[in-house]
Length: 83
Image 1 (tube, helix red, strand yellow):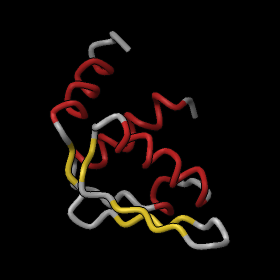
Image 2 (image 1 turned 90 degrees about the vertical axis):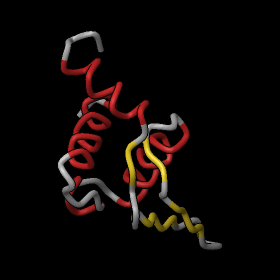
Image 3 (image 1 turned 30 degrees about the vertical axis):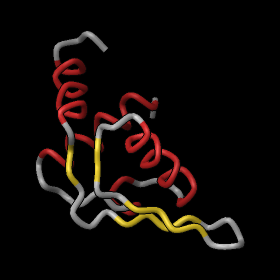
């Protein structure tokens, strides 16, 4: 799935109050951590924490996950065909 499609799918799950964990999204751990970091870095979501172990494993915690105005705008742009 293309990155923009994946971001849209995750944001829609958040909007609909559905779980946004690795199993529900269907990604491997590293890919899931990377896309969630992208969402935080682009300020589309907040209240996500990342824990990195010495072996490079990243744990993503989404308790209290919240979509920002920028995330809502992304959904509107995607649904209107501008993205």
